Image (tube, rainbow, N blue to C red; front, side):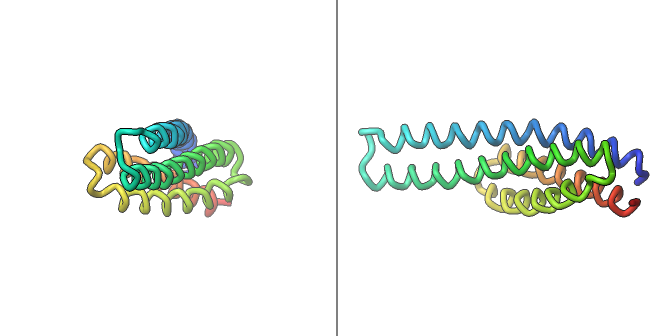
Length: 140
């Protein structure tokens, strides 16, 4: 992959990563809110309320953390695309994004095809950012 192609890929992937990160962050906040409303519902017994609250807390935390990492990964990717001296944070957050992408993919099995497709797309974006950042890092 050439240096100019890597910069273009890094820029486009960074923008997409920021968009997915914002969506993930908002969805995580919504999981907190809706899970809390369901957990305090009077229609369910205590055990069901505790289970729903626990699941929504864990799911919301994972979505918010993944969203924040994707946003940071995208911001550092855009910075690295402009200036090759600033590529190391993009490279590091691409590795972190890969780890979270694999964890999210493994956790999404059994939750439907839409969730798996979303995890695969997120993982592919992190792979693109890592490959482009690695090319720019090696060319320095």
